[in-house]
Length: 349
Image 1 (tube, rainbow, N blue to C red):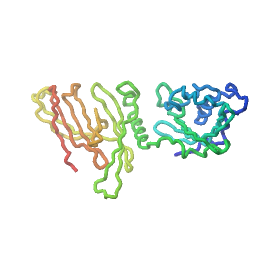
Image 2 (image 1 turned 90 degrees about the vertical axis):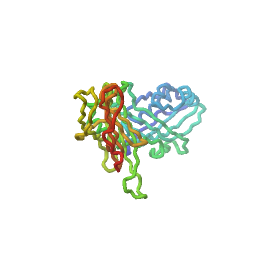
Image 3 (image 1 turned 120 degrees about the vertical axis):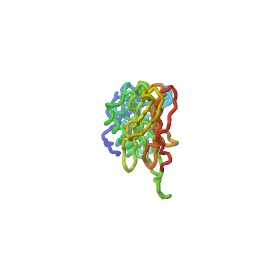
Image 4 (image 1 turned 45 degrees about the vertical axis):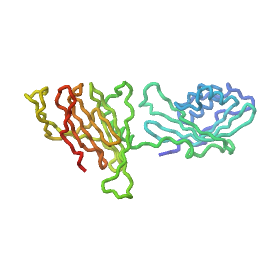
């Protein structure tokens, strides 16, 4: 929910513009305690001709194609005065985005003045989830346009028509909280490549309920895949799904319990029979993939590294959930990949 943080009257201009003002006389402001302070700091640096410092208040998206172009943009500027308005915020995926209404009065070296107004978007990334190098609160982007109002009246009342932060993904945030609460201490903190564990893979599945009328809208289910751990030859993942009825819930994967009979009771011998004697559920899928074209999750568990013995479960998305539709087993340990299907529900409605 968007809420007002600061009153417009709480801020004054950064620099008083006079005929004899020099860059060194402008006050030095380097403050990242809040979004408006970052904007004030930007114009402090510009007024003092400290363009490298000004450049640093922007994040990965810079205000010009390169630093030299940024500096040349102020060749004719003598000084800039800034006022900010009521700052608002929105949270999204580990960050807070602030919308800062701004008006500036720019005085050129020839003595002329121009007024500009608009909004800056400032981003603060949650410090607790960051890895070095630290990313401080910074300006994401700004959009200022020439204004006809007097400087004192030019600050926009709000940034409703200015840059907006991305819409908060509530389902994703709930899935991340659920994963952290259940698996935060169980799963690896790093990805197999050595980097920090990242965001989950996310998918949107649209479908129609069985028996839905032609006028009924499509339903949507979200699917989130979290990396959990990497062993010698098996990688495990945890899945969550979310919809507008049941909310966010973890996927459990049904799998048959097997009685495998080998010739001479030796697992290196010929397989005589594979019997299903029950079912169990697993909270993680192994070496899994999701195919959006067929809406299936496949879990492939190697029984040893060469992959000549394994089990594969195929889970099809139907009517808002994933169900086991096929289970293949290669129990031979014979150096070849030759699975057999022991369960096939593909023809089920």
